Length: 114
Figure: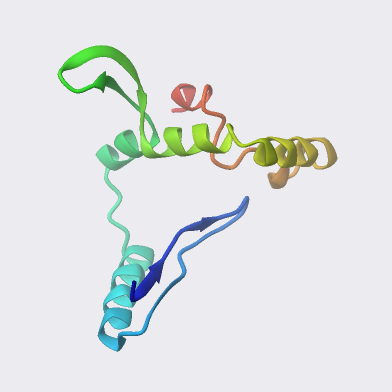
């Protein structure tokens, strides 16, 4: 692999480090990231799709369940014992601070957000 690209999220920031050995790839990625950061294209549909939505769990029909990038990501975090422990510690020592809150949202509460 000739490049590295990732998203790193913390309680009060998200960063998107990237690297490549190819100079042109670097400038292409830099252009995309700067465009997204300084000229975001925020559409209502993006929020509806990214946060949560109802969707069939299997193609062709069947049971309907919650889907969405944020919803699924937070389900993953909340299934991690290290994350649960760390979040519990922060909620107890900093209950009224940003760090005392789950920055991505509690999965069962995400559908109630407006």
